[in-house]
Structure formats: C-alpha cells, structure tokens
Length: 359
Ligand code: F6P
Image 1 (cartoon, rainbow, N blue to C red):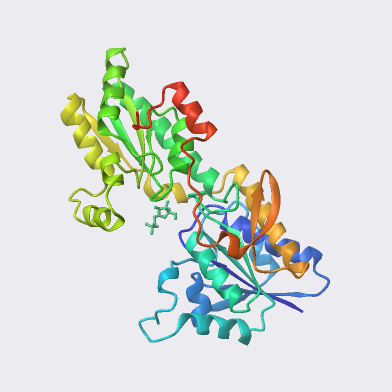
Image 2 (image 1 turned 45 degrees about the vertical axis):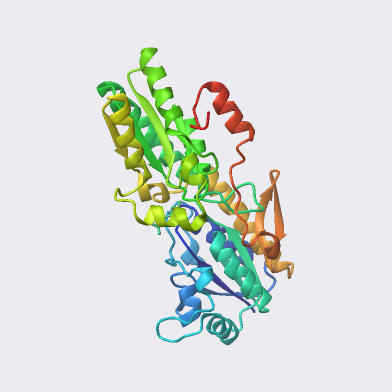
C-alpha cells in the first residue's frame, strides 16, 4: 500500500486542482501497489488538527478545469510555526503526529514561498515531503514558472484591455492595481500584454516626476488616455531609501486604501487629467486555469508523483530552462524570485516606450 497525503496551502490559484489530478492519476496509473489518498482540509491546518478525508480516484476526475481547491486552503505563516496555536497546540509536533498516525509514505504540498519553507522544515524533521510550485505571483525561487501565473496574467490583461476602451472614450488616466506585493511578475507581463503605457513594480522604484512626464508627453502627442499598471507593492525611489521598519510604519499610517489611490491623486493634481483607479483584485486568482496553466500544472503533478514512485523526497518540482526538474527543498526554501530590472522583457518594454517610472 502507498499512502499519500495532499494539501494546498496559502493563497489559492487556478490550477491547484489540475495539479492534484496530475499527481493522483499518475500514482494510480504507475504505482505497483494500491494507493490510499488522504486530503487535508484548509492547508497545514488540516495536518495540524488531523482534519482530512479519505479520497478516491473519482474525486480527482473532472477537476482539470476547476479553479480554487477542492481541499480548501489557509495561510499558516512560517514565522509563526514554532508559536503554539491559540488553543495551545504545537504545530510542528502535531503535523508530525498526524503524518505518523496515518502512516503516510509521502505528503504532497502545493504552495508558494512561505508554505515551501514549512515543507522544508517538515522534510528536515524526517517526513517525506514533495512540494509543488503554486502561486499566481511567479516568485518561487528555483523554477522558471509557477502554476497559476499565466491564468492570473490573462485576467489582469483582460482588465487592462477593458479599461482601454473606457479610458479612451473619456480621455482619462487609469491606474490599475495588479497583484504582487513583493514582486512584479504579473504587472510586468499583463502590462506588456495589455499595452500599458506605464508599469510600476517593486523591483524598479519609480519617481512620480517621470510618471507625470510620460502622461504629459502622451497628451502633447495627441493620446487621449494613459494606462498605468501598478503592482500592489510598487514603491517610490524615496520610499525605497527608507529602512524596512520606517517603510512599514509609513504603509501602516497611509490613509488611502493602497498606493494606487495616492498615485492617482497626485496625477490628477499635477496633470489636471481626470484619473480613475481600477482594481481587478482577487479575480486574478479566480476562475478556470488557462490552457498553459493546465499543461504546466499537469506536468508538475506528474513529475511530483514520479519522484514519489522513485522513492525521492525533500524536493520541489520545478521547470528549469523548459525542463522538468526536482530541486532540493533546502535550495529553494526562503528565497524569492524577483523580476530582474535588466531582464530582456524590461529592456524590450522600455525600448517600446513603456515607462517604469525610473528614468
Ligand atoms: O500570494 C498570492 C496573492 O494573491 C498576492 O498576489 C496578493 O498580494 C495576496 O496573495 C493577497 O492575499 P489575500 O488573499 O490574503 O488577500
């Protein structure tokens, strides 16, 4: 008997179910022994409190195209891992106990950066863990791609497309907030795909002078509107000079709901142009996975399952230069994959005339 556990952790995304389907189908197809499947509910919480359900192959049928996660998810911050739950339960020992009680041979964890750090910790504690790179943010170190990313880019792009028509009718400036607190992969890709005029991302601090100059130049050359794609975590050059603590304090004291409102206000004041904010928000994590995500999620699931059947654990499934790979958890855990300001795509976007507000 091969006993496996599955859990989905952190913010959801479109291709979690497609990934689990890939794992289970492969195991059932290739395992020489019968497979017993335990699905933990709501991420690591299910593992901590022993909340799980026995699942069968048919539970994973018909879910390739279904967004969200059939298991539910939650955030269990890594930095609080050794702090007992409100009811006194100690998380790590509780997770080990659940794993051992069920006599699991492997735990498949679908999660982003924080969740992968916890997976690494459990692996160091002696559990057989395989991580799969989930996140719309595409910021997982060690893999070219994460599942969820391309679907989110499609949704953010559709938002930029739709805003174009109304911005053009009214001759307005639109500031569109796109997900990404620490990294700017989605705004960068959606901004290029949707033809944004300005893209502001955390990796390239901006100066409002440059943003305003871009808008004014467009107005002078007869453009009726300007579209600005802004990452949730976009940061000005001035703020980038603050210490982490000072910046956190400044963000906590902000009276507007987020940076896009401050940017929009300043633009309206300085250019006299009607400026509006648009926020696709959590729609970027919603709905069905796109075709590319379905393929990549399936590849991740299959590779994870094959690793398990090979008796290999303590790795994260990754794509490196287009090839599926198994990278050691300790090599990737705790590292973020940022947009390189010198990358080809940024260089090309700049050559096209897109401003990043830095020059
Ligand atoms: O991690 C994915 C993500 O969607 C980020 O892009 C975003 O900043 C954050 O989660 C939103 O978190 P929450 O769902 O907790 O509001």
